[in-house]
Amino acid sequence: MKNTRKATFEDMNQLAELFDQYRVFYHKESDIPAAEHFLRDRIENKDSEIFVAEEDGKLTGFVQLYPIFSSTRMQRYWLLNDLYVNENHRGKGYSKELIEEAKGLCRSSNACGVLLETGKNNDVGNQLYPACGFELYDSVNFYEWTNREMEQK
Image (cartoon, rainbow, N blue to C red; front, side, top):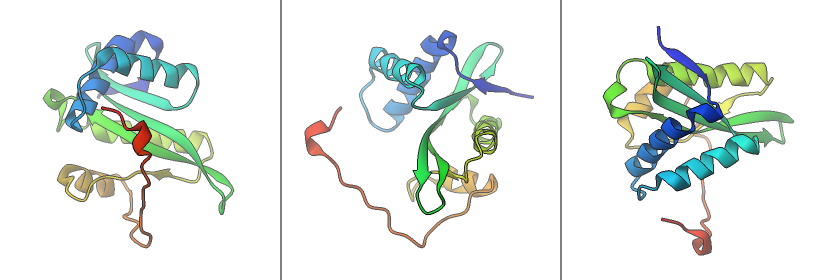
């Protein structure tokens, strides 16, 4: 059985390395000090919930969720924004266990659900999420406006 739990400040060095790997995977430049600063701020400010998977004391993956709200339901949602497992530990069930942590957070906070988005070409994710009980919600169009003045690396 794998070990998943809520991230702590003691995890910061390993978590920042994993987060940096995640960003590099999405074609961003490596910047471990900035990753650590970003994650430390999220935890200190209680902006997000982060869960980690570990094996033999080494972090193997993480999931980060942000609270959002549904006005029509008048309830909290959780946005599963980041899910990553180190490439050497993929295919061992860590992603599913981290998703179960996300579902547990949803239940314990009396939220109405967990939302996420993934690319249409993310074959692994597009198989993983339905296998974990997520339903494709295709009755809306998703739009984004980008503030070009704030674009970073």
